[in-house]
Length: 213
Image 1 (tube, rainbow, N blue to C red):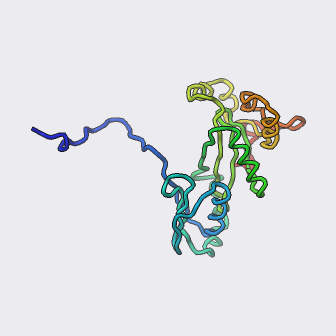
Image 2 (cartoon, rainbow, N blue to C red):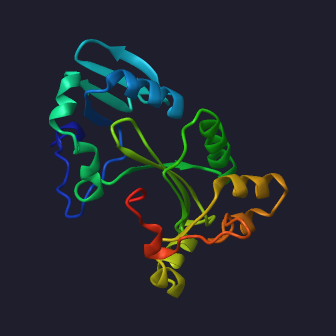
Image 3 (cartoon, helix red, strand yellow):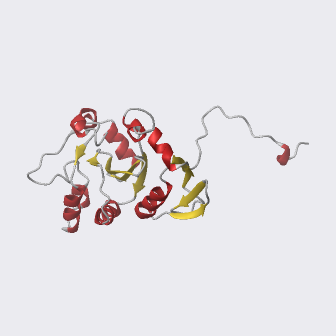
């Protein structure tokens, strides 16, 4: 008789996705600036640092970001490295806030420290603010515009999304003003919710410029 402990797991025929995205690793010649930026933007703490590497975290994971230190002069060998993302490779990493309020309050905090988003856009499924770290790595801070995954999926299949899959640019300070004035949440997640009166937003492909690319 074969015990339960001796049984091998049965083979599977479908993909087994991982449970979590654990961390990302960056080779950088600007380690001090990167550490300070992630401390400021994400509240990161350094859990270990030596001459070769620094490990940072901002939640209950042992580390979310590792910075592999390379000699500072190396960056002069690749003067256009920060622009590579605009044409090739990984474009950005996305982080979700569970409420529009938290997203906008963090925007206000960072703006007060001189850190502004390079792109503010309501994609439809999300309201998103994009930032760039000292090495030009782009982080998207987003909040979901629909209360359920089913409603989000339905929007992806809608004629509105087919007509404009990129979104509408907006002024986050104006959206924050509206939120503080008591505007209903459902009105704040509309694509045009953050368009300040008298201004003309960039829509769909016009929202993509060299700065926002």
